[in-house]
Structures are given as structure tokens and as C-alpha cells.
Picture 1: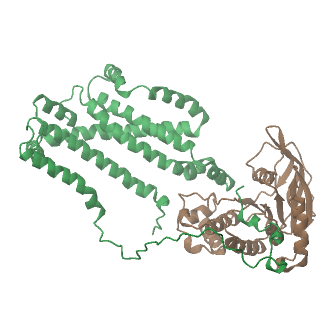
Picture 2: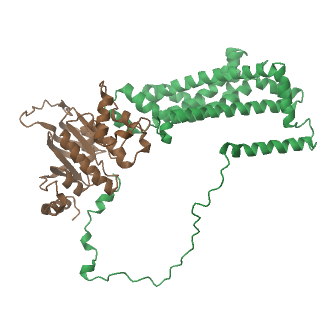
Amino acid sequence: MSILPLRSSEAAFERADPLAVRIKGLKRAFDGRAVLDGVDLDVRAGEFVALLGRSGSGKSTILRILCGFDTEADGEMQVARQRSIVFQEPRLQPWLRVLDNVTLGLRERDAAERGRAALDEVGLLPRARAWPVTLSGGEAQRVGLARALVREPDLLLLDEPFGALDALTRLRMHALLRTLCEAHRPAVILVTHDVDEAITLADRILVLSDGRISLDIENRVSQRSARTDPVFEEQRAQLLTELGVR
Amino acid sequence: MSPNPATVTSLPLARLPSIAEGAAPSRPAPDKPVALEDMRLSGSRRVRRQVPQPLLRLAAPLGFLAIWQIVAALGLVDSRSLTSPLAVIEAAAALWSVGDLQRHLLASLYRVVWGLALGIGSGLTLAILAGLFRWGEHVVDSSMNIVRMVPVIALLPLIIVWMGIGEPAKIALIVLGVTFPVYMNSFAAIRGVDQKLVEAGQAFGLSRWGLVRRVILPGAVPGFLVGLRWALGAAWLLLFFAEQINADRGIGYLINQAQAWNRTDIIILGLVIYGIFGFAGDQLVRLIERFALSWRKGFQGA
């Protein structure tokens, strides 16, 4: 775990319950308009958290702060040092072949070997030498997943990673993500505005509104058979209400 | 956040009238008749025999040459104002046989190659300094933008005062002309590299040098190549001006001499040589593009 004190903090860490993220009183304003207004959030190691919110609610801002892209926030924050991210657009370097994209920034000797293994996990080993422009949207996003997982993160940040995919590809990506998370057990923060996606994937669902976490519930829907679970509709209605849709 | 097709499925669908609720099983047809159009479908029959592209591209210039030769051969224009293509070839052969043509060609090539090499080097160096460092931008970019506005030819008197009228002055003129297009395009390209890709590079632990090497410079290559194209054009233009100052060899000198003797065949020979060199340079840049930008076209590679 690395300590990222936004203000000075020497945060005592509770060893008993290993956390991947600990956020206290996180505030961020853009031009005087408070987007995050005191967010408290703990994520346990290995926990899959979905963060829902309307567009503009600041959910992506939280991810950017967790990533270290945005350092102009106030509050206390501790984040797993081993963390990686999958963006909404794949953000592959177009001039690097698929494998080189996966191993980007890795300094280990066996980087290429690990990159191949990660590509194999997402089913794209045959495309290791391809240029990113030749990939379909789903394939590019799978390369993005491989690039994140090859770093063996304790914390995986997903910024609407399936938002730009078609509905069928998205379903297959959900299954793939579930398998990968079971194999690697990182803590996951999935930012999304898709309630169904949150219910089918997460252990815990948060709703961000007015700059705070306004709802924090355990996902009671069985993930093996989410759609047929009677709790599904009930929980969906609860989340949609919180998001102001119903 | 872009509009997301999946959220559509989250909308309450129950409000749509369904058959079970007793709505009409199908909507009535509109009163207005629908005009149907016959579409002509040609299937795969329309495949024509393909003439190779290079031949097609050569057809127009060759046709032009043929017409020119015919016009000249029929004596429709005064041969002192315009010679025939054949006369140009004869002039080239005559100059070649006494070794003059080679001498002029080599002199011009020497100037252009040195001018390009030094100009590309300085333009690229300045662009990298200004593109990667804030202080570099403050120091370099403002000055470059001021100097850029001065016509390069207008610097010629100053160059002559400083460097005399020998080879260095000629090369210096070309260097100046090449530096600016290379600088402007490369600087803009470095600054134009997608911020999202830079962020991704940072997120995955690239060092500052790693970012430069794997993200910023590769991303700036297309812009640099545009600058290179402009630079080639500038180099040939300025070569001609450079060869007006106290030259005793070079294609520009050859053309100038020919003008004094009313030898339009040699003048046109000089122009053709410029054209061929310019074309060859452009082809070279295309070749570089095919290698450096293969990721764009999506070649699979080996």
C-alpha cells in the first residue's frame, strides 16, 4: 500500500481488515463548483465495487484522483500501490503492436512472457503482433484488460470500460471480467452508469450523488443467475430511484 | 461520457402498448401510397479489366509530351521560344558526354543534401526542445515565430555579408528554408499528441524518457513527415536562388547560362531535372512513410 496524503496524514492502517482503498472526506471543486463534497469510501482487498452515478456526478473524477491524474483534491486517501486502470476508450498506443501495448512500462525481464500469458487469458494471443487499428472495439478493450492485469494489480480501476461496446460484446466482456477477477482477486472499482451491469458484476454497489456517496448497499442478487433472481428487479428499482430515474 | 446504448434497456418498457392489453395487432397502413423505385443491381458483372495504376498515371504526361513533340515537329512555334522534347534529350546527351551535366548535378545535389541534413537536424532539435520543455517553448517558439515571418530570401544579403559568396552561404540559405517547416510541423505534432495516450502511458508506469520515446515522439512522426515534404519543396526553391549568387556550377547556374544564350532546350532540361529530383524526393518521403507509419495502414507485419 502506498500512502497518498492529499493533505498531510499519517493514517494508521488497520491490519485486521486489509483495504485496497481508503478515502476520507475527499473534496474536489472545479472553478468553485464542488463536484466531490466529502466522499468517504473504503474498499476491501478483493472486493468488487460498482460506483454508479449520473453523468457529471463526479464518479470519473474519483477514478482520476485514485489514479494520480488529478492531485488538486483535498482529503485523506490511501490507495494500493499496485493499481491499474482500464479506460472507456482502449487508449492503446497505435504505433505499438498489441503485445508491446500490454507490456508498456514493464521493466521486468520476463515482461514479454507475462504479456503473452495475459493476452492468452483474454483470448488474444494470436493477435500479439497485430497493430491496434486492426482490432475490433471488443478486442481492443480486451487488450486493455490484459494490459491492466499483467501488472497483477491489488486494485483494478474500470472507467466505464464497456460503455462504447455493442450489447452482445458487452455481455461477453462481463463474463470475461468475472472469470479474470475470480482468478486474480483484485479489488475492483467499476465506474458505470449502467445499473444492470452493476448488479450483474459487483459485490457492493455505491451511488454517488451531490458529491457524496448517497447509497452503499451489498449486492444481494446471485451473480450466477442475476436476471432470474427475484431480488434483481427490486434492487434495480431501488438503484434507479436513487439515480433519479423513477 | 458518451451516450450509451445499454442504458436504453433500463428505460421502463412496460408503458409500451402490448397485444395482451388489447391494442390493435398491427398499425393501419398510411393513406399516402408508397412510390417504389427500381434499383439497378449489377451483381458482379461490372468488374472491368484493370489497367495498372502506374500506367494510368503516366498516360497524361506522356500524351502531353507527344502533343508537344508533334507541335514542335510541325513547326507551329518558333524553335527559339520553345524546343521539342527530342531537342531537350539531345541537349542532355550532349552535356552528359562532355561531363558538364554530371558536374552540375553533383554540385546541386551536394548543396541540397547538406542543406536538408542540417536544416532537418536543426528544425527537429528546436522542435523537440520547444515541444518537451516549458522553458524550451518560451525560449525557442516565440523567436521562431518572429523569424519565420521574414522571407528567407530577404536574409540573403545578411548571409552574404556574414559568410561570403561561397558554398557555405548557399547551403546556409537552404538550411534556413528547411528549418522552419520542419520546426513548425514537428513542434505542432509533439504538442498535438493525444493527451489521453500520454495519461495512459503515465498510468502504466512509463518514465519521462519512456513517455518521450514510446508515446510522444512516435505520435509526432506523421506531423514531422508533413514538415519534411514542405522542407523538400523549400530546399529546391532556395537552391535555385542560391545558385544565382556567384555560382560556377549547379542546375540553377546551367539554367541561367542557357538563358543568356537563348537555349530553351537547356532551360527546359534544367526544369525537368528539378522536377525529377522533386519527384524522387517525394517518393523517398512516401517510402519513409510506409515504414514509419505502417501502424496506420494496419499491415499485419511478419
